[in-house]
Image (cartoon, rainbow, N blue to C red):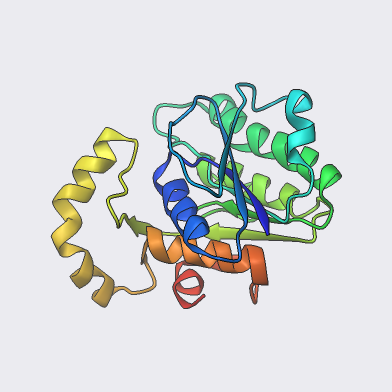
Length: 219
């Protein structure tokens, strides 16, 4: 199967990419990036594209895809709603609308977050925007849309967050993750578990469209 990955340089995207490259069912991973990463693998094809709101120049490279793993995302800290909406809602829907037209048989998996507001009308800005994004993705004519809402994610296999503050927090909290997960197993997952769950949903489906941390760990 041929899959498309957005956000391969981020912490979650790194985890998904690792699982895709390890899985023999995946024959090619098309990784859409703004700048070359110089990462090489027999199954990896990096597609450099700078404008994530306009896919006209690369449409021919986006045909014949079986699954998409959309792992792009930013923290809402320091952003007003208009800016956060542009990088969360606008970028996601711009890609999804093109992909649903080119690949109606595609499965689309989107990384949202624990606490997302499904009504899209709540008081918490990021949760409201994420909820609106989820709702509009589900209206597109894909084969299936899966919405992943992980809580705390522990990076494994040398994977690191691209955010300095998060790297420091993970370094400090690392020794306590096993204990915290025992105390609250439905709040914690890992990049490996999330990557495997997204790959499973993309290739084989999942029992529900919205997957919280406990569903991710079971899948």
